[in-house]
Image 1 (cartoon, one colour):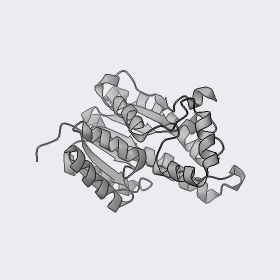
Image 2 (cartoon, helix red, strand yellow; image 1 turned 90 degrees about the vertical axis):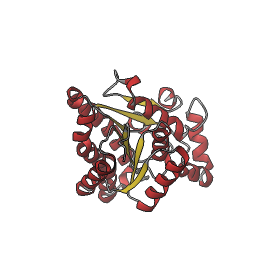
Image 3 (cartoon, rainbow, N blue to C red; image 1 turned 135 degrees about the vertical axis):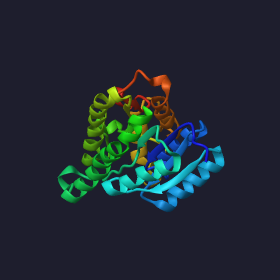
Length: 253
């Protein structure tokens, strides 16, 4: 098999923003690994992306909270494509509810997935990215910079802020080896999850829109374009940054 010009690994890519990011890479001819804990969904997404774009795509199961599973993802990606040039950490979760009721179990679950998982994947792919002088983009959130309302999710907020800090630390450490590390902090984005919230609780959706100066949700493809920019040579002077893509939400708070 002819070695692709570049390959990207995107975690949490079976749906939502992660899938939009994988599609954006594939549309530019980059081979993509759709990494997700849901193997069937990852394989289905990879097949559809390959059919729509003509790019190579493969679905691989991964539990980012498990270092052994991450190691299998690394070996699987390298076995398939021979190299990894771009990594995007999009796997994450949120558990809503008052902080006083946020249990130890809930806290650990969110920290393990959002923060530890992001670090494990960055660490696992570091040797391959050093070899390719590649890029990492981690997905943070507006919740890292502004308390969101009316929803409350302390574990999510804390981990997304920590991802911004992790991004800075890794960027400075790995810059001499030619690896750039940045993050994107999306605002409220038009995913299936938010659509479900809007359908079941229109008052919450109205609150989100009223707090966003553009008076709209961001689109997954728009977030993907920011990620793509941070992954390509046009942004080679940018590292250790978290780019907020929120329609003005944080500026207006």
